[in-house]
Image (tube, rainbow, N blue to C red; front, side):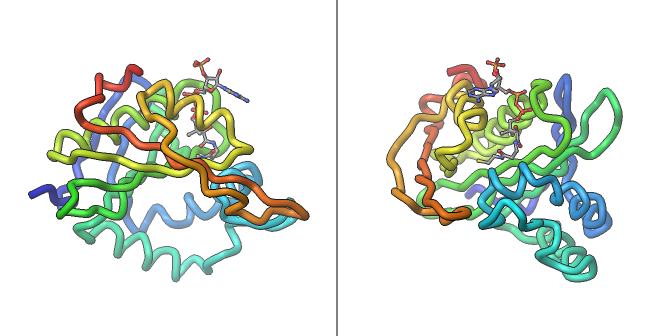
Length: 190
Ligand SMILES: CC(C)(COP(=O)(O)OP(=O)(O)OC[C@H]1O[C@@H](n2cnc3c(N)ncnc32)[C@H](O)[C@@H]1OP(=O)(O)O)[C@@H](O)C(=O)NCCC(=O)NCCS
């Protein structure tokens, strides 16, 4: 039975995924203030809001410490190998043992467009399938063609659209559901 209690460190050429701890909260909170991250992850609902403001540091520390222990989620910090800096997080969540599926989400702040995200997606999703999962699912907003491109390149396919699912500024944004099956997994090449 797949279980996310084991949280290995995954090493790639450009990035290392290390299981998060409560001690990462301050760094992640700071990175989350990146307006692009707030907007593209749907964490904020207006151009002027700040996602890093959602939780005080002690609460965020407790949340990450809890996520470091749970058996239905793996949260990794993404470390850029070239600098040793934490640049974001990559997450397998919502483990559904009965259906052998889970969700996926990722964000990187201040280090986008360098190939780090593509490798982090490949490592994370590859781990999901290595644990015996059958399916990985994610959501991406219509105003995020870069993320959608990365997901498609790794092998995810569009499965449907939740129309106008996100309210942002004065408008509505569609949310696309994408999925990838173990049988279609070719190591992260579409
Ligand atoms: C999405 C994300 C993880 C991708 O990671 P990344 O390190 O920036 O991505 P990479 O550098 O590996 O690859 C980016 C790809 O997108 C392409 N791209 C960039 N802008 C694009 C656009 N507007 N439309 C389509 N493709 C685009 C690049 O050309 C590159 O593809 P290529 O290598 O085939 O040329 C990262 O950008 C991120 O976290 N963004 C902010 C938060 C976010 O969007 N999270 C995902 C929410 S669903």
